[in-house]
Length: 189
Figure 1 (cartoon, rainbow, N blue to C red):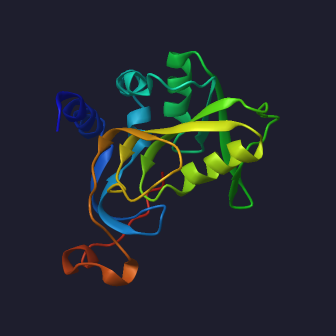
Figure 2: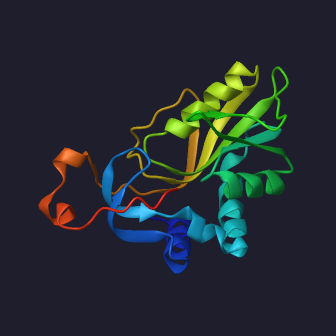
């Protein structure tokens, strides 16, 4: 782990965003660890710092718009857009599917960066990629704070993270005894 990754991990710990216990993740998997990025987002100086560490990793990418899925990607997406002087859009759930609403549109060929907080399986990022393509835009990369997918989430565009930290995840019927002994919580993203 390099100094930048240690700093990111320390920010998550300091803000109470890295939780330990028994959690049901958005993906439906269970884990003994949970990244509650909303806790980081309470501290805008921490969000600003995390984005400032992520922006250099985006060098060489051309984009004019940042698209973030609600809820988790909202704050980091907005801060990435601010720091890169890009337009900012978000996708939100409608009938259990992410969509762009509120009059948001993309122009054909518009280059879009997808911003996410924590990625486990990549479902919301894939939905955003599909939204961009369906609107005629060009998704250029997925930028995230934490990749906990253990490199299992693959996209047809680059995936860039500040921290790759994979805690074990389990299907509900395959919990280890020590995790099964703790009541499960679903804290939300």
